[in-house]
Length: 537
Image (cartoon, rainbow, N blue to C red; front, side, top):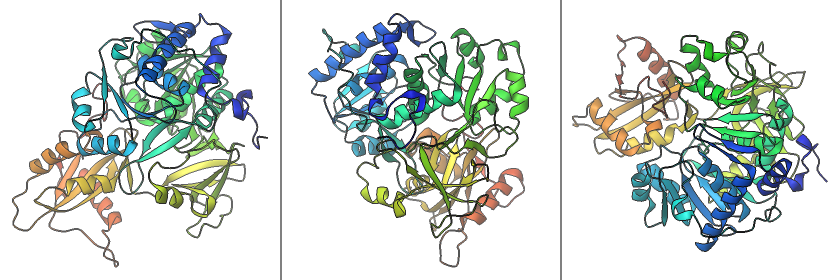
């Protein structure tokens, strides 16, 4: 028996993607399910396409437990691939679209994938990193299945998958080392969508819009899952563009939109225009709440809602639309689906209102991630003392609201991407003329943070900033390339001989603000540009 209430009335054992797809389709098979600017696809059409893909995968030997790497933009085809693999109890591995070089090779090898699926644009980069992995390249076209267009369809069994099955593998960044493969279950994804549906009051007449990537948890566990649970339709954009955003949500008939905080900031900087209010959107779901939410709510003609969640977890707290505007750091009341404890460095709980690390435990089985694949020690470390340690700081007020106060991790947050400083440092340090690297964050011009690196050349080397930037573009994915770099003779150290990151962060902020600073950095070609989508401006 479930220990937590059933969000949106979905029992725990029924929380699988195939069951919810069948339930949603049964409301009216002819209703639109997926909508883009090109066309819409009904529930009946979606099920037929999913059945066709399932047959094609089966013919290739893909079945229960098989992992399939997918590197494609947000699109109907990407959604159909996820749904088809779910019916086979196979596991999609969603890869960052900007991954390249050593990072992409790591993703492919680490994931244990037996097949790769990629669009034409990314095919050369993916196949170069695939190291012999069979790859299917899907041609351009909204619904062209290419090699996966089977001659027959496989009858779909909504009951085949278990709520405990892994639905998708998503890579998440920690404070050290390469990103970790996070095993996300059907129960986790559907519970997220059910909580989202319940808190935002979604229903079959809604249309949920996202242009966020499906290699992150937001688009998958909130927009897609929210549509499955609520019976709403799903409106998709391939990427964020501030120029067309409001036209897209208006023309697609969206009633709810998911966004990142950086997107809101970019939209805010655009000159006001009538299209900002000529839409049906009631709610924009965004993290964090913008500090000027009251003014932006009035300007855009909608309410904001937010939550505290991670790739590994359910939303531990969530506001309803319009709540929490006057509470800095507010993420909503703690919800009954997760135990939340704020602890000190000794893992002992802190009193209400005191800031410490946010730690979590599920109330129901399989509703959170099932470990980091291939990394048992990291999984055990994350579950220290049988509580999942988020690495985030927060507090819970006497009224039960959770407030997010920042990170403990050495991670730089840039345009919705978590960038481990150690990955940037390790890959840049591979240059033969570089002795040492330290990466820190500096405030971004619009929102979140940018990457600033201090580089110590090897003795006798004639290293230039241009050399470092060229090396960065060779070895780092675009979203990790530093915006600023400074060549320095050495790095400050603590009493224990560790790099003094706090001191460097202060120096970096001063250097960016003051061109006369001794650490005045070189601005790279990505400085002040929108990462990862070049069309965002």
